[in-house]
Length: 449
Image 1: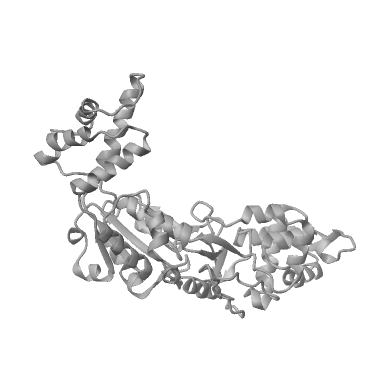
Image 2: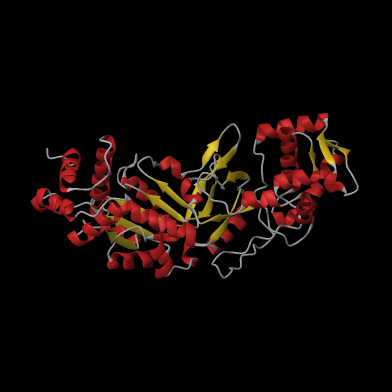
C-alpha cells in the first residue's frame, strides 16, 4: 500500500458538509509513486490518443505540476514526445506516444487496464469517511417532518425514527406487510439525501497496490459536477490546474448516498468485484453506501440465509469497519460508516438471535393502522387522485372485511382507489367515488379463498 503524506482537509461548514480536500502539490502529497503515475499516463495516451498537457491533467484529475515530473521522466525515457505547443507553456504541449511508448503502454495494459482519475491512497479515503460519518449530520424534527409529509404516521413512531437517524447506527423496521415499512425507510433516505448535507467520495482508491473504483453514477448523485464542467472555460481550468490550494479533483462531491437492495442481495455482492482481465476492482454496495444509508428491503427473503448475511456483518456493525480481500489474498480495512436499515415483514426473533438483535440499536415496529389512521391515509390518497371524499366507501370496507377479521393494511387504500380509478377510465366516465364502486374494486382485489 502507498501511504499518503498529506493530511486531508476536512473542516465542516455551517451546512454540515465537509470542506473539499485540497489538491496535492507533489507526487508525495498525492500518495503516488512516479512509476505508478507514469504507467497511468502511458495507458491514458494509449487509449485516448495524443493529448494536450491541460487535457491530460484534467482527465487524470491532478494538477499539471504533479504530472509534470512524470511527463519529463517519460520524455527522457523516450516513451513520449512533444508534438507542439504555444506560449502558455508545457501545459499546452501536445504529447504523443513514441513506438517505444506504445510498447510500454501495451505492456502496462496487460498488467492493469485502469484508465481514469488517479486514485487516492486508502489512508486518505479512510480518514475522510470517518470524518463525514452519518453520525455527524444535523437531524431535528422540522426537516425530518418535511421528508415524511406525504405519509400518515403516529407521533410516537415519528419520535422513534428521529433518534435512530441521529445515532447513525442500525435500525430494524418490522411489522405486517402493506403498512409502510418500505415507504418509511425510503423517507429516511429522502431526508438523508436532501437534508443530510454533502460528502466527498473518490473516483477510486489505492489499497495494497490494487485499484478499487468507488464513485458510481448509478448510486451516487454528484452535486453540480456537470454544471461546473459546462461553466468552467479553459482559462479557468488552467488556473485551477496550475495553482495551489484548489480542490482535489480526484474527489466527487455528492449527496449522501441512499442504496436500496432487496431479495437479490447475496454474499458475493458484499465483496470486491474483481475484473481478472482489467485487473482492478469495484467496491461492493455497502462500501459505496458509506456516509449514507444502506437499506435491505424485504429482509429474510434474500438469496442467502439471514444467518449467513448477519454473520457477515456482525463484526462490522459492532466495530464500524470491514475487511475486503484482494485476489492476491491480501486483506485491507475499510470503514463501515452508514445507517443500515433492515426492513422485514417477518418477526425479527424468527430471523436472528438475541446476540445479533443486541447489535441492532433501534427496533421500530410498524403495526396495522387503527381506524382513525386508516381513514386519514384513505382520505390523503383520495385527495392525491383527485377523487371526492366518500365516508361510505370506508364504512363498506370495515363492514365487509376489516370487522370480519381481515387485518387493515395501509396499502389497501392506494390499491383499492387506483382500481376504482381504472374502472372509471375503462367505462369512460368521470371518477366519482361511491360505495358501489368500492364494493366492485374490493371484490376484484381482496382474495377470500
